[in-house]
Length: 56
Image 1: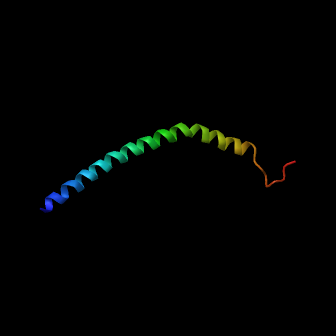
Image 2: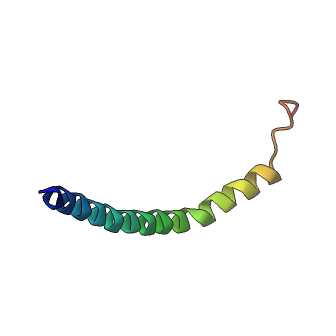
Image 3: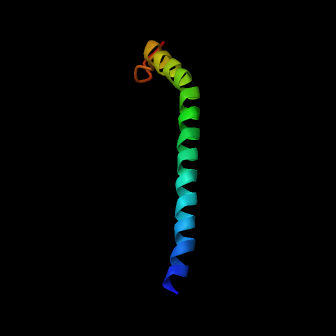
């Protein structure tokens, strides 16, 4: 009887592991797509600093 309770738990665990790898690959793809844009923003911020609101 206890084995019947373990089988659904194992199936759910396996399904969640598969979803985690899909999620990780999806996040990695989106991060790669944004990387160059974020680098451009960082460079722009450093080229044009605000200087504590003392710009004229």
